[in-house]
Amino acid sequence: MNKLTFSRTEKDFLNFSRIAAGPYRRRGIIYIIVAVGIGIALALAVIDVVRTAGYFPADKFTQTLLTTLIYFLMFYLLLRFFNAFGKQSWLAENGNFLSEKTFQMTAKGLSEESDYQRSFTDWRGVIGIQETPDYVLFYIDRMQAYLLPKSAFKNPEDIPAFLEKAHGYWQKAGGGTQAAEGKK
Image (cartoon, rainbow, N blue to C red; front, top):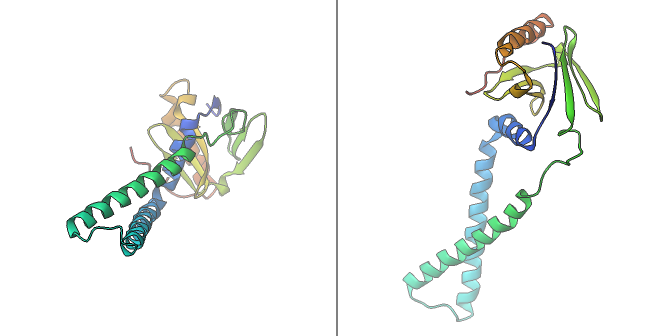
């Protein structure tokens, strides 16, 4: 079974984003730390302005309580603001990612075709093959891959033979000696 026809979903896009960005997640933690730091700095600046204006009580406990409340209020408002953007779909309903695809694997390479585009990658251009519980990925760059849902296979028992054939083609073309292993 070298030719498969399937359609991807928005969930496939989000899962691929999570899988491909896995090695780069550490940067996300740094962004969170920076965001918390900025929130604290803004809250302290607001409190300092209010205190110097004479409206802030001098009691340390009350000052700490109000500082915390202002910080969480600002953080909550920022989260609500950024969350509003996350509710929009990243993909067009009639766009290429969600369109029906025909994927084909040959001894020469991989091809994928839809009503909107056609692509071909020689096996020498494949830098890794990864299997996850739901997908088979043929990486052609660190963040770019042919994303093949396992649900595209009519018979799940065909997947191991398909992967074995893919590894054979890839190694014969000079690709890596072992695939990038996915976490199961």
